[in-house]
Length: 486
Image 1: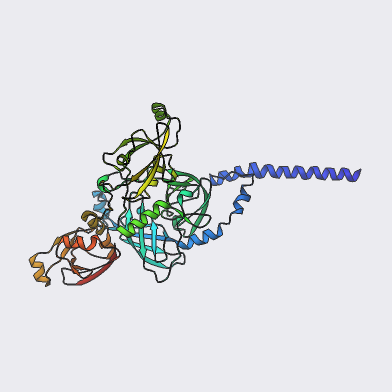
Image 2: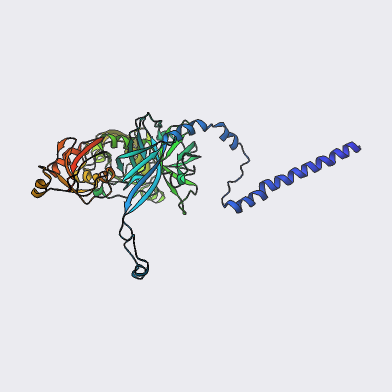
């Protein structure tokens, strides 16, 4: 009996001790940590830990860090011209009016072994120099092949002395809410950083891409993949990958009141990325297709007003005269349910699906009219109302070069002993400045073709893809050669 009594006493003490430890571990200790870190993940007493351990992230992480690059950009900005005369009198203003070099950083994803890299437009916008660093610390100078402000994407190219590791495209249409994903990039210049999370939502429109001006050819397309993988400044342009190591998005934005991660991050779906990269490589600009309708999401107000019972789909609020939808037989009041085989329940999702196509492509539209399902074939058009692919205009070409030009005078020809040429004026951020061209440089030939007029310049580069060799002379007689990519 004494032995049993002693055993019972020890058992009671053990249980009591375990209970005390448990209370401290689950209640007191977390409260102390909350004070130190301000945000503390809740303790989950379920099998979620076992589920996470069942997924091995090491393989997709290794694949991703070797295919994600660090991007460093340099651009010249003019300082603030405001100054205090009193301060200037006593201390002077040695930097007033002098251009200053601005450094920017971000991430990029290698998408082919020959050196093409996808990133965000805002990472390289206005950059005069772009430098990329691989995970093995090798550094290369990159050329901006093209940009698309409408999707905040850009295509870069490096000439590497080796075949580069790259990520293969996944299918963002198959991405499911709740699936595990990795975000890979360079937050705060911490290179090769991998974070994990799940897909929180799809088809998010957060109105972060500016534009909407048809004259500037900017038609924002936002249908982001939302995740809770930690993304911070410097992650822009980096990879969002699935557990198989496939690229499913380009990390672009965060939702935060502080500028740092606060639980929500957003990525451009890879199906849009793939189309934009292909267009920039083949045409130098994105071939934007339009369905020719104005649309509304279905909410309570619209449902009550129109007597709509099924909230799934996108309501056709109007038609563009002569547009693709009108010609296909779509009517105002129709509810579009699918583009191709993909369901569309919001305006953002519809824009995402249409954004994957080019002018001239035929798509199948499934809709509801008077309670009955109909399917219509529709041929998409460009912004000008035709099915042709668009080419760069002269204005767009010169904007990419970042300069204006004038034909040289008879005196210049005589002094420099040349028969023709175009002088570079008003040099700003663009291809020429990135290549090292200075104002006053006189272009005499492009790829060995003589440049006698602005029309010659336009023709020489309008259809050009890849490398360009620029030859010419400066006013002091110094001859120079420059190479860059379009």
